[in-house]
Image (tube, rainbow, N blue to C red):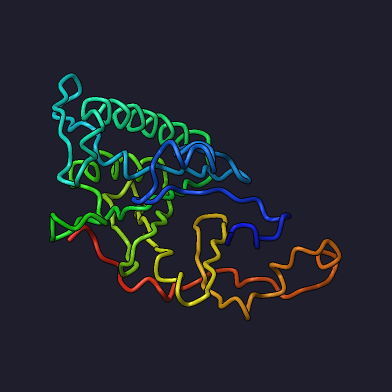
Length: 237
């Protein structure tokens, strides 16, 4: 119902939440994890509800299977879940490797948070072994931003520098926008990705969809953003 109100000229992609059944999501929205290039930016969408069940890698040649403590349907085969999760995890590693060599920037969409939680029972966060497995790979692939669907404070993860370059991965959420009728805009710049939030009543003219508006000299977005809704430059504390 809500998606039917979206202007048909706006390309739409969907990211599964923790409440979506894979088969039903596939039926209505297509693949539950996928990637695409937009203007040289690699956009990666993961099914984090499945990914969190991936095996724990203890070494390059040894994997220990582990299912997170999140409740699993008794009718679902645990080994099958782990196998599907491992397939997605391997796919994600390949996508990040491709992003390292082929993309201008990388942005990842995920329902669950990639910040380590102090409360292991909080199902809004990915387990520690998944975060540890992929965060360095994301930094190596120049991932600029992770967009999640949970309610949490936006933050920045400081990664080990590559040479003289400081690596920062911005974590921003969309969960807090649901009840405020707001829109998060992500802008791609030469060396970074910035994000701004607008109320639906205050969407700037440079976002207009009408073709004739492209011919007008409309004031565009600022060349940079202080990402004021990102509250702190914190590491994985």
